[in-house]
Image (cartoon, rainbow, N blue to C red; front, side, top):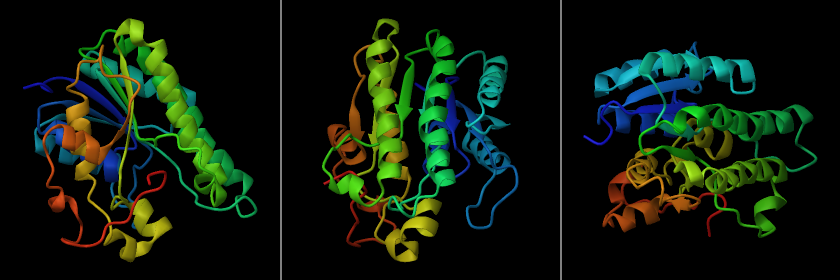
Length: 273
């Protein structure tokens, strides 16, 4: 099995897309490091690092739950050290943790701006930085950023400039590392959904149940990631992948089973036309 005993470090893996990727790879025998903040369940969000670890073990993988707030470098270093001591290294990094606030400039408080940039930009950069020495030793090493293709049309900035620039910064980190790390054969790619995904963020911050009903499940992202990580790391790097296209390239055209509501009209995600 391709993923047997491979170690996957995932930020924000307690729920949603991060957890879906964790469970998909756990079924293939991977070691999953769940690096996230939640140790007590928030009723609005659901899940903790411990409940996610339990699900990973039940799915067939080995799990390591580590409380880690990626705003703090010392916590990142500690989490990576624990992962390496437990599993012997890191083969795959998934930069999934992210903060979102779809507010216009006047409505964006400084603390929200700082939160998005501390997590989406600084945190992503530092997690990547501290994983690089271990990825250099990994088997077919990959970094995957849950960030969008960079589309400079003004409409993607108009209503939430602070969020947009933070996510585009994630994408630029991916692009920079794809070139910087080529000589080490470490792949660096981004993955983004064509449609909205049924997550707590969509439920609580974006459109409630109505938008959930027009979304796909996180499984479409985890399935796309599953195929990306199998590509040769010395050949597949610097790509802005869209989930639908990844699956189409694998010969998968029927995506109906990913819809939350079968047959529903799906809603395009941000940054995709």
